[in-house]
Amino acid sequence: MTTAAPRLLTPGPLTTSLRTRQAMLEDWGSWDARFNQLTASVCARLLAILNGADSHHCIPLQGSGTFAVEAAIGTLVPRDGKVLVLINGAYGKRLAKICAVLGRTFSTFETAEDAPTTAADVDRLLHADSRISHVALVHCETSTGILNPLAEIAQVVERHGRRLIIDAMSSFGALPIDAREIPFDALIAASGKCLEGVPGMGFVFAQKAALAAAQGNSHSLAMDLFDQHSYMASTGQWRFTPPTHVVAALHEALLQFDEEGGLPARHRRYASNCQALLDGMAALGLRSFLPAAIQAPIIVTFHAPQDPRYRFQDFYERVKARGFILYPGKLTQVETFRVGCIGHVDATDMRAAVTAIGEALLHHTSIHRT
Image (cartoon, rainbow, N blue to C red):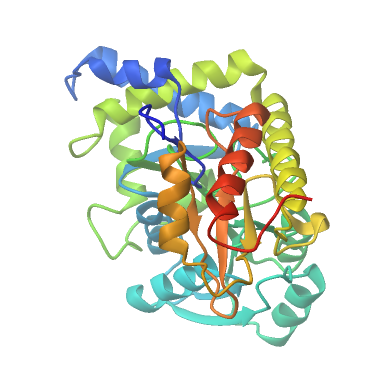
């Protein structure tokens, strides 16, 4: 039993550093010049991660990542547009639900939860339907950890003269995405994922010309990215009350991101975390859901133990008592659980988590170490 705060092995919120948490101890005036400078610095640092300063605006938005996804679709897809939604998990389905709620015409292409969408699929679908104006893709589908082939799909979308919207919630900051090489109208991420900030702020990288043409598209005042950007560009301020402590924490997290060595170093640490997790769980006899070739080093889905005594909630509580928070599975056909590799953790933490998982299972199922 541990008395320390457990480590979050989840896809966000996740474990943050002490420096990041301490950055939230100061209160900020939302119109204060120092806070406006903090916001501007955050946006500049975010744009630098994907080399997007020349081509894209960074527009922050209050709320979770889903708020920002909805804002991007509502702002950048004209009301007479049509979205092709690529689905192989829960977050692709959420993209389709957002389109339905916003009244945007859409079609879906769904593959199995362990099958990436291919560029050939997209090429065929765009050939078949000239009405499609936008393609919406989840880069790393958090419900499994599967990685979809972003660069190849982006090239196909551009070749057809259509527009790409990327949900990069679980990949931005850890997996390389270069705006100079991958064409997109919008890429969406959030503060509480691979950047290791706290939750509460999403942001959209919007292609400059696409945003300039988007006035009047939005269904919502609060989620109108055109209006949000216009106001921030002219005043330096947020339109409505900003999540000041979240912005301050993200700024501090971005300083640490650069100190660590930027995206390449962040990717290396997460890849090391993922490998330590996969090796340790295999030694326990627990199988990962995805093959290695399409497994992103963000979150890993594992098959639940084949034992009638296994109950996820009991297992979760036993692992939590040993210092780690896991995530339930999100698949519909098979019973699974998920373990995140991201956050302020390293391979030593992952090996300790595997030990905790092994101990939690040892006396309650037939799992034994090999």
